[in-house]
Image (cartoon, rainbow, N blue to C red; front, side, top):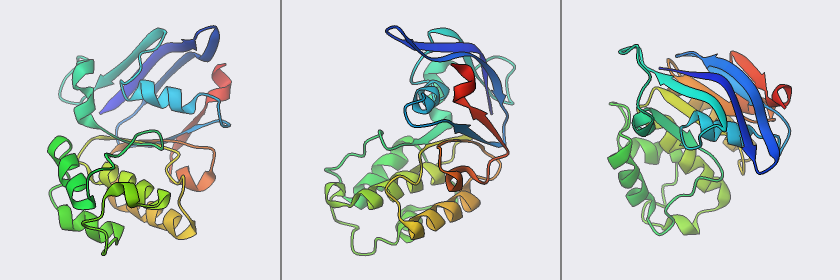
Length: 207
């Protein structure tokens, strides 16, 4: 699956966040969206997810099975998205959160609930409410759920936020296992977040 953006611009009140951006994100490749904090990386990611509409231009999602763009209302079924601003349901326990997620975004065929527990290595936290997790534990859970979901598109906004050095290595191993043959887009200004990417866009070029 690929994402085609044609001359998109986004404005909040009187400020243009991004202007006249045209690009095609091809299936099976990994891309980095670069730029300093506050430059609009997250805004662009939200448009690439179908959550936000551009003020001008078009964002289209194309699958190999059809020559027509996918209905924007159905795009969410093809996208997994992890970001610091996407909240978990904190009243759920870890096991409940995994099962709840799986109802809407099925995991890969070889991934079960136990697989996620093993990935996270939170052996004593299966029945602990997510609200009692540290910020690093919450970030690991977000990443594990997104990466293990069977979707052709994986969006990661500042993926190593709240992770220590060991957590960064864990994240890179997660990418190695789950990012193959998917369209992966990473928004960050930290090199280790996106060092596996094939190409990049600097959002400051579209101001």
